[in-house]
Length: 257
Image (cartoon, rainbow, N blue to C red):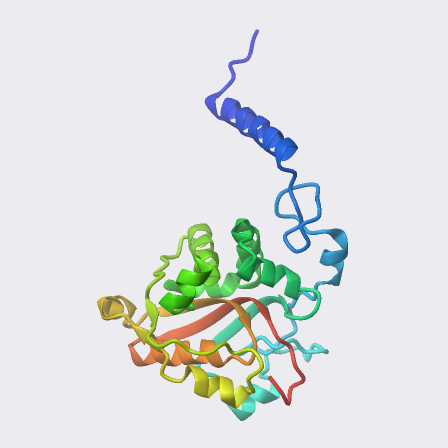
């Protein structure tokens, strides 16, 4: 007896054939180096091995990794000395010499095709935050910077995260109301002053925000000045809580960050 082939099987076969043709014409390339790899979304083995993926044990507030597991949820020294404006922060990897090419290729190198793969990593690192979130919003770019870059990398990540987790994404919840100089090369205090008052909640979203837990998405957390400014803005506008999820973060000794 000849088995009837289902539509799903036919569609799967067509999709596989299309992928094979596409891979033959445009071989998949490493998200960081551009070198050929065996499948889309993969990294060159040398890149993968060099990445410092972050996980437990870590500070329950800011996500700073601990060298040793003390056996219970604890705060790092920095969060004890000064509690951040957000409730929890998590990141996929340390931002260092190994991860920098990957992040910069996505952020400045038009590798927007990397968004689904990077967001998948973020979804695993921030699974608890996504489960608790009522809304997702990206850190916004100023309109002139957005026009020059042509895309907001944080908004791309937020869109994929929301679609995968089934959490509403409000891409324009926050507005960057003044153009700030780049944060590169600034000290922690200079970064805070640079972004102070730079963000605002759009009036049309205030009712939707009231009493909600917001997941703020960004590509990199360096000192935390930008996400803290956003978190304070969201809280003043009525958010019940603000968590932060980033692709990478700078990891400094407890006395720094």
